[in-house]
Image 1 (cartoon, helix red, strand yellow):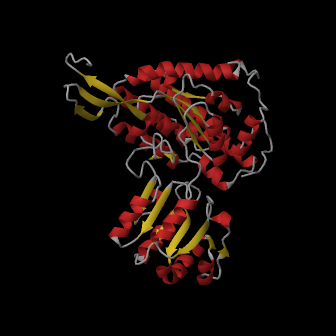
Image 2 (cartoon, one colour):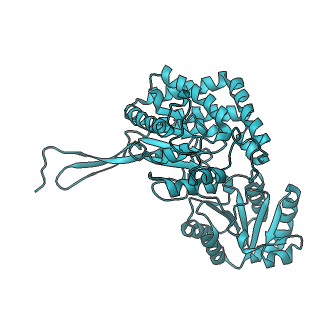
Image 3 (cartoon, helix red, strand yellow):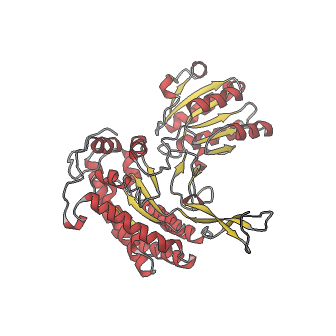
Length: 456
């Protein structure tokens, strides 16, 4: 992921380069852009943010039926314009290949028929979800007779900064709209043509549904300094959500004047407990590592109880070998698996995002939980066990956004957990923890009903 683009002016940049260019201020805010880009970049971003704030007021009071109508119109337009979207995506893929970007990166960038179907299905799912806005979370009566309730309301304006995956454009827009928010999307320059094509489709659907077009805006320039400009709009933007590599997310956190929901990386563990069903454990571990190794909810470290290791590891290693997985093990693992490479200290907190797996034999659950606490990233952890009490203990003591019993880490996903299309996974606890669906794009306000009470 450190390959230098061949044609810098027209090729996508990686997150580390983006952060470096902004930090070094190599593209000053005063740079002039073509009239189509709105002139001065800082002024353009500020105007986008201001218009999003205005649109958010209309979205906050928008009826559910109107929001659903708009989402289904977007789905219909994506279906009708699928070939156009794929043609625009080919332009991005061509630039990515010229730049020498990795196969995994290009896979995330590609819009295939399955991607189109996923976007359309996601829009339908979100439209079918209950609208959280206006719902009452809790009500109680005070001794003086006033009734106090908490009502769910939109957050307001959300800024989303993301890389490569064009489907995020549609997923994010859908969730933000259904939750009554306005959103400004800043996709990666590597997906510029794809995102602009999707932007036009969303804009058309909003207009035809009678919703404000400025409720969904995509920053229409490739310049990296647009990120800094967006992060300075604390007057208009309520929340920033970055999605991408660790370097991008850290840059956003360090430079934003606006609250940020984030996760830096997914160092996910599966712990195979003493007495576990080893056939179940093999299926779960293989799926968690191999099904899609380049995503944040893939297993990066496998912990195995010493009592199960001698029987479990040789057979598990054979399946990993067939799948092309490189094992980096602790000394005890290497004794059992002579073909394994010796793990270093750097391997335990590593997010490999590849067919590489760290393996450690532990003496008991205490050691497994301590290892997760030391090296994990609060993302996703799983236990494979036949013991109910140990499963409950693992659920209670492991501090991650999703903790699973006898299931793959790959289930840490908004769609898989029934939230509809997710907007990301938060490993911070303010104000969301885990996959973020509709409710995580809202907050609550207190509403109080009285009949003349005054405070004495």
